[in-house]
Image 1 (tube, one colour):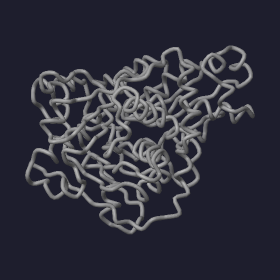
Image 2 (cartoon, rainbow, N blue to C red):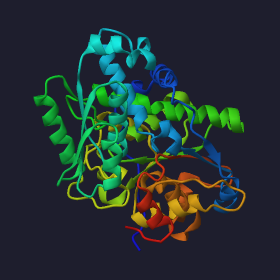
Image 3 (cartoon, one colour):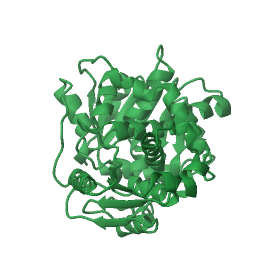
Length: 402
């Protein structure tokens, strides 16, 4: 059985110029925008008391994004906010002047005109972009990497998007979508992968993700009387979500930040690879990156996020598929008294990793390094539900790990 690998962050610090992207005032602006949606509600933060006892932790909390906007995943938070900020910029307005009812109005469509939003996705991000474009009366084109499931493609097509599964990996799909956007009149790339020269829209997407972190922090305090988490486990593909969550908590608790652990799918662990190289350089992972954690199968880091992560993250972890599958099963069938959580392959990876660290002797060194013990209050994000219900059932009910 493949082992969990980890690398403690010893990379040299930079001037931390990107941390301001996730400044509290920026996140507040995104949150106000999301609150204007009729579909908006705060997603549940579930406390797993019995599970915490089993794992030898004080408290375990899971933010359940399967309830987000009826789309079964958190990703729409980023795409919708970035599209709004793009439209606001084109019209010379502030995004605060474009709440949902204005953004979706006939008057605004006439003022802004017709645009086509391009993106690459394994499923959740593309569905969010397609959903937002559909609501705004705009066009969207979505490319999916080989290995993507028909169910996830159908969900995107249902939002009036033009969508296809290509015969290349995720990072190649990003390049293809970007080339198509550049050749299209009023074509805009909406991607959470940042690269040199393409950083404004990814920064807006990260700010959109901040809504989720801000909600979770408020829920900890207001629902559970927990002043702040001691540890945050967060999953990463290109690292945009991880950078957003890390950035939010670093800004929220500058004097006493929680210890952040980044969890990647082992076949696509580009951030972990960067941490092991240790000089702060960006590292890529290529090839097919075959993993059940489709949402994390990205091999080229977001440049903005990478800067935040290398300045603040404690430990980077590369986790194998069986760990994500174990996390899915444990959350689906927890200890009696704890509520069940429907968490997809990418959603459950951090929880599965935490459970293995706490329950398996071979990870005692990592457990001790992280200071995970009976005083720890751990926050995790289940970023998706059963976005592919058949695959979910195959893993959770039938015991498959592929």
